[in-house]
Image 1 (tube, rainbow, N blue to C red):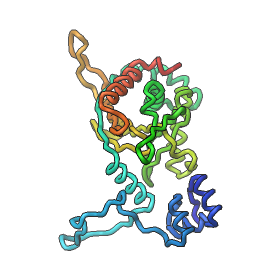
Image 2: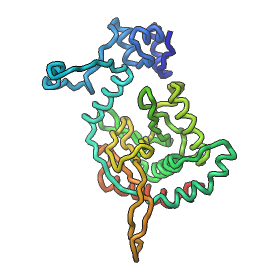
Image 3: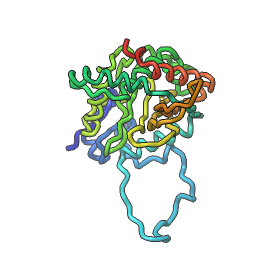
Amino acid sequence: MMDVAASPTTRRLAKERGVDIDALGAELGSDTVTRRDVERKADGGAAPAAAPAGGIAASAYWQVDHAAHGPVREAAVPRREQVAAANLAAAQALIPAVTHHDRADVGALEAARARLKGEAEAKGVRLTALAFHVKALARALVDFPRFNASLSADGKTLILKDFVHIGVAVDTPHGLMVPAVRNADVKGLLAIAAEIADFAARARERKLRPEEMGGASMSISSLGGIGGTAFTPIVNPPEVAILGLTRTETAPVWDGEAFVPRPMLPLDLSYDHRVINGADAARFLAHYVRLVEAPTRLLH
C-alpha cells in the first residue's frame, strides 16, 4: 500500500469520521489525501473526478477532436497536478492580482556570499543566494506587516500574523512543492541555507512531511537557475503576495559619472490588490532592494 500524505487535521478528521486514509489514497490512486476527499468519502460519495479548474466550466471551444487534425497521444494527468491546477486557476480567477517589477544590484550580496563561503563549507552548508533572499524577505515582512497577512474568505477581516514563515518553491520531477522556512526572521543565514538544502533534497525524494508544507507568510519562486528576465507569479492563497526571482544579468548602471557594468537581479512582486495597493507594493519592493543591496544588515 502506498505511503499517503495528509495533514494532521485531515488525519484527525478521517479518524473522527471512520475513514481509512490509506485505503482512500489507494482508491483515489493518489499519494495525497485532502480534507475534501475525507468528507466526500465519509458522506458516502465516490472518489471525486478531476474538478474543473477553479470550478470554472470549460469553454465549449476547448472540446476539440484533436485526432481530426493529425496523430495524437494521451497521457494521464496525475491527481496531484489536477489539484494544483484547480487551485491555481481558482486563485487567478478570484484574486485581482497585479505584478510590480523592479531590480536589485546583487554585487554586494555575491561579495558577502564569497566571504562567508569558507565558514559555511566548514559547517557542511552550501550558502546560496536564495538564503539571502529568504532572510531579506523575512525582514521586509516584519517592516511591512500588511504583506504578512491573509484575507478572510468573506473579505471582511484581515488576519495579521505574528510569525514569519517563508515558502520556498522547489521544482521536482513530480511537481512543484513549497515547504516553508519557519521563523525565518530569527534564523541566521547559514541555518536558513541548511534548511533550504534539506528541503530541496527531501522534496526530490518525496520525503517532505505534511506539516512542513503550508502556513507560509509569503513565498519565493526562483527561476534564476533556468533563465528569464521577468514573469508574473500567481499569488498562492491564503498568502497575499509572492516574490519572483529570475536570472541575474550584467547591465549598464549610471553611477553619476559614467555607465558601469553591474550584476542586476530582476524582481517580480505579485500581490492581491484587495489587500495591497500599488504604492505600498512599490515601497515594499524598494525596501527589499535596499536590504539585498546592503546584505550586512541581514547578518544580524
